Length: 61
Image (cartoon, rainbow, N blue to C red):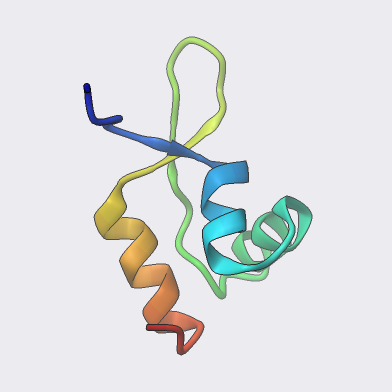
């Protein structure tokens, strides 16, 4: 099985237990750092390390 290099906003939001809209709102309010964007479609992309940092910001294990 091939491991995904990046997670999309929906996957990250689900892992954090929040909605995708809340994830984007936190980004806009600078509570979360801005993620990289896919060059082809402009979608937000997160690494597993970035997901772990977001979990720490939210106080989640």
